[in-house]
Length: 244
Image (cartoon, rainbow, N blue to C red; front, top):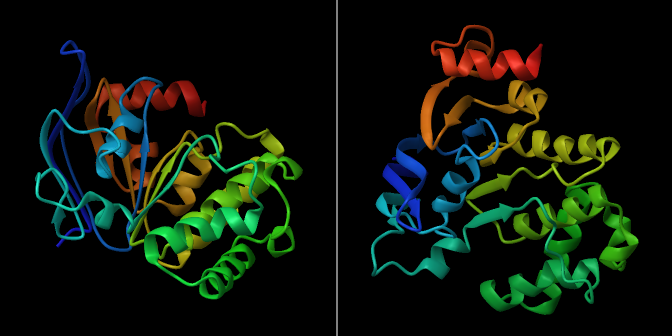
């Protein structure tokens, strides 16, 4: 069984804007899938349909055996197992790093303060900034804030991690520290779906590369095949512009 399955997923805005058109995609447990494509191609909308931040107009979304598009499904229960890291860090500015990471653990997972603190400390070490536990977001660089956001998601013990262009809001010198954390997660077997413009990450970490244009999946395959020998002219034209 796929960890994530999108079957015939379409998303229309205002009845006229077809952001996603009949997407079929299965993602296995432990697989890293990277979604690329031009700006406005529907990449982020596809990602947001996985945890129903965008509700599909048509189609079925299944995560870990639960059909999220069924009205009887407890969305909060399933979403607790799906970590999401956005372009912006979405940290609470009035809370310390520790408080940001323990809040959802206590409210959603029902953990004690001591248990949530232990998990938060471990995840901060995992992303390489254990010394920032008592800092406030304003005291951190953009790269450090994004690593806190990743630690916050990991602290919930997710079965799937979704990344929506996690480095696009960072200064160039901060990109590598976030990508290094993501590469480490990939090497540990985390199921990941990543929307990104970082082709180096896609080459290094992806099991499969998905190229989307105008809301449709145009091509899917191992990164080395899609990069070096794309089957479709639309894919070839895209990579010609960004790689050469």
